[in-house]
Image 1: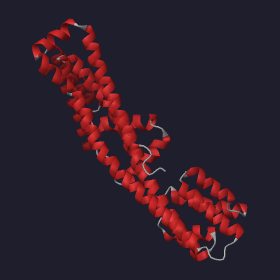
Image 2 (image 1 turned 135 degrees about the vertical axis):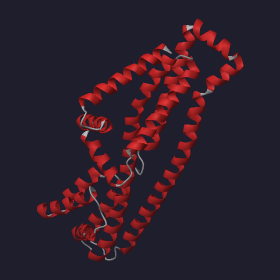
Image 3 (image 1 turned 180 degrees about the vertical axis):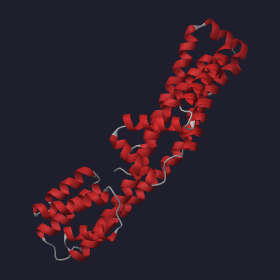
Image 4 (image 1 turned 90 degrees about the horizontal axis):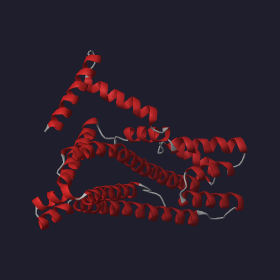
Length: 301
């Protein structure tokens, strides 16, 4: 109780100091602005671009959702670790450390949303370029048709425009294709570009069948990717459930030993405490690694 009282008083003193220093500004807004300042200063530029696109897509968490996530992490970690150690100080430390997972999970989630968005744009790019090429029999004209149709969005739209500019500047599409292939490493992109090069350089009396086969390949790939997303989502729910159940295995030990004997064992054995800390850390790593798998390479081939 003394520790809780001390922490409560410390929190109030910090709050009063911040409030007096920023009397003309809402304290909540001040904290939010400082958080945004730190984010803009230390977050990698590439991630800032990704997060801006996620916001543009309307899939970024609101401040309220982040607050709920932080509260859930802190509350959950406090309860779980208290059941392990029956020590308020240790539980408070774990509760504070759990906040560190929020930026990492945000990073993973934003990368997943952005990856899904890019894949959908690549699908639109390849499908529409094939349709345009079937009409024009010119790769550059096909690209111009796709850009003018308005079906693409940035950054893919800007990169397609760069391909067009490079083609006119160099008098060949070779450099344009290398540029796009390197930036979007999808085999459907590389295969489609290779097909267009063969038709352009070697000529073909009837390319309609080859283009149709390419469209079917794209459709099959897209179907496979969306099926993989559904499978991942189902696995993700089961994985999280299993991970949280592992945290609560200590309750089974207490049930077998009895809570009183368990607490006495904690007081008498340093090794038991070390093992309990190891269980928490290993299980946390297990969960974070699973989140990394779930959010990475979505839409990749």
